Length: 299
Image 1 (tube, rainbow, N blue to C red):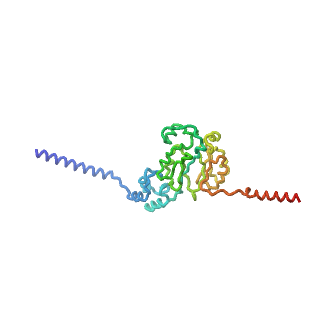
Image 2: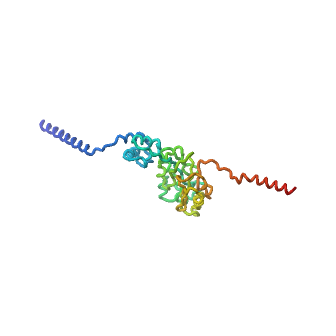
Image 3: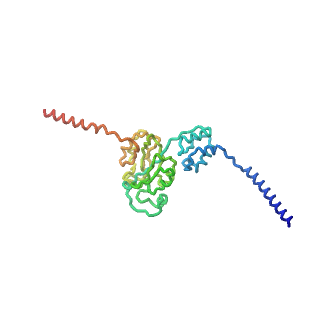
């Protein structure tokens, strides 16, 4: 009996030892070498895991940086150029500066500008409503106002304005991660170039219907009249599907298009007040001339 127990213990021990040896050699054969620079790059990143870089997380982005021959198409929007400079230093590569961006809301369909024609009492989610029907207004393109973009933002850079029913971007907090852009089923949020003093000009509308139909939906819609397109001296405006679009890379912020828009669909943000026109300044002089002419006739 004792011998049987002894043989059993020896057999099991031998089997375990053989299995361990086999597993060791298998592990060595299929061992994946990981460059230690990946850890260094990951430590230099903000750790937001927001996906704004185009990768699922900071670890994946770090791996892509280490494997890349250059950093030309790689950028961490949260850390910005300073972070990418640190990454380049670790990898011995040249840093490529990227233009800072900021999100904008391309819809002005507030309660005042876009009347509500029905009441929705279902799930309070933009994607669900978008897939069900046009929304609580007749505009099939405008903001649904249920804040899915706000929920997607991890940087407290957005909130819903109760007075307008539209989301608002807090520029100082926006890191241009693009989470809100991906979350919006109506594609009304866009990342645009961040100019000096945070000035921006853009068409706050995505309605592609013809002018007459679009105007019924919203009083500040783009009607595709092409007036802005005709006055732009920098070819920054294009017309497509009855809708004007301003390229933030080409736009020089001259504001000529803004005054031409008959529906005020083009927004100018963070600009100083416009100067009084010279014609208006000249009016008192014209009145004085009339008085002088009257006196001369009396004499």
